[in-house]
Image 1 (cartoon, rainbow, N blue to C red):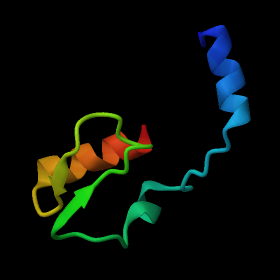
Image 2 (image 1 turned 120 degrees about the vertical axis):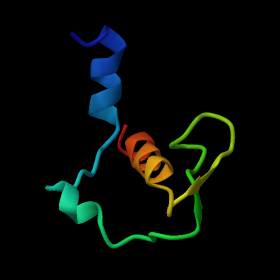
Image 3 (image 1 turned 90 degrees about the vertical axis):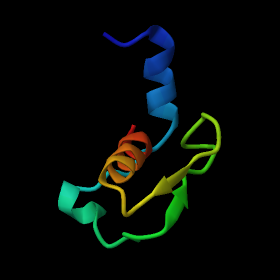
Length: 64
């Protein structure tokens, strides 16, 4: 069950989601990526896209 404030926040902010996970492809696959502060509210971290664990963690944080 959502907290009362969450219902209003979800309604106020539009979300654009891909229809399938396959639509997430096409981005960079090598090098480093820093999730923008508006997406990842933690310390600045460079995700190594060639590293499978970093790649998955980066997408998990972006999708959440």
